[in-house]
Length: 139
Image (tube, rainbow, N blue to C red):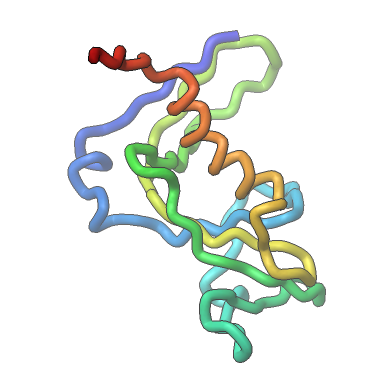
């Protein structure tokens, strides 16, 4: 199955002016429709440490932190305008937004470097260092 990704020049030209607010949530939401997130999801700064945020989702407490993606990397928000009725067919998705920061959320605990998502972001820098050419040192 092939997936085609279309990125319009308008989307790229508006970056970073048109950045959406991205939340990485520790749950799966089985819905493809509108959610009214800005109406119902209202994060606030943590009183103890303004670096972190607090919120709740379906009555469960969340602790969050704003995270920037590594330098040179961007995230994409993609949408599929027409979902296929059967599996294993070609699909086309369109880039609707580009972002370079997001809010990462944990259930009831402050995000840390030990969280898998944050740890994966730090591995990008490590991977680049490991795979970059070695410069020879001449005496």
